Image: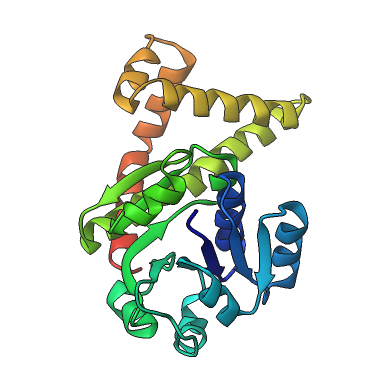
Length: 244
């Protein structure tokens, strides 16, 4: 079985390591983040912590999830080998630059996972060669192939609606709590409602299904529309696209 290595076990790197372990792969992880690497090694017998070079030496495929400001120095000191595959998890760094640091290994894949990958059935964006991502995650996750860097940038912009969506759920639950009811129960209900609704049907069909004249959903949607929510969203996405 192909052995995976992970350089950088922050929030995303450790989430990817956990999913790899749950998928049955043997995983080598860098021990620089002692908290995350120690927790993972203790929880999963197939996860082993080692120094960065030992991770590279022992892995067939190396996933790199380092912060952009330290990546060049950390990676360029490592010795990769011919026939090895490197997958970058660093959206802020061009793949061609990572390839320079990892030669003679093959670096043709940018993979962007999300923290909920630990639970399975999570989306992954892939630019370049999707084969290594399919091998490790194809049976457990939803993989979206991205055609070029411009499309990746656009997808990175639109995925950012996740945070304001979470704010809406949080604020709605807080509002209910302020009415004297159980805010925690409200949040659990809202998360289940939203997740199941979007899994069940496309957004257009969902809007139509919730468009009962005078109903609560229609009234709140129209309230938002009257205050220009769609325009605010578009302005925010354009700001992200422009690097603002």
